[in-house]
Length: 300
Image (cartoon, rainbow, N blue to C red; front, side):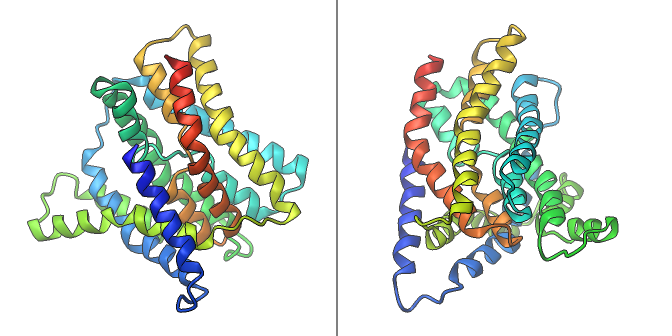
């Protein structure tokens, strides 16, 4: 639970900073730029060597990708039903499929299920959330960003290959078997460690408790999909296939995590409904304080 309290503390710091006259109005944007161009690439460079491509542990490896397909289909359907704008649709496509499966997911899994459950949580995060962050999220951000007026195949490809997280992923894969000098390794680790504090302070700075009427339906839909539909769907998929046990339980538990903080930062920097995204991330974490212990209780 300690990481939950840390995230809440960072969130409160951001809210308080917003009320200080000394803080410029664009502070949230500046903090997100730092995350996108420095902290997130550092985290990817740090994490790529830990990736283990294996046929083992298929349930936690497949679950996030099955859920991603279902969430994308749901968001596109709801977008047509409610008439959501293009930037709102793009924001939800980025923020909803991925959960906070490492910073919150790992300690919560360790605390509630024990160390024997950790391999399943790690596979869910590495094979699902992490790879999707560096690939799927980058592609969606390039397609839906309002900075690209009329997306063409060429402009989208250029946007993808110039995206900081994609560059970091490519470098990380190329240098996977290369040992970094101690100073470079320390620099990467230290910069990666700043991601969650900085981005949550930025979310707190931009967090609003007032939303326009047009933002209410996507906000409520987003929280329902992320915190209710996704774990229920994960449970339904594997139980319908006759699967049970620790691998299934941890896959369901990871699917119930609040929205991924890094994905939220990318959506905001792509200009996709920043106030809505901050609300989804902030409220998702607050609701997660209640929903995650409840999911654990239901599973046990």
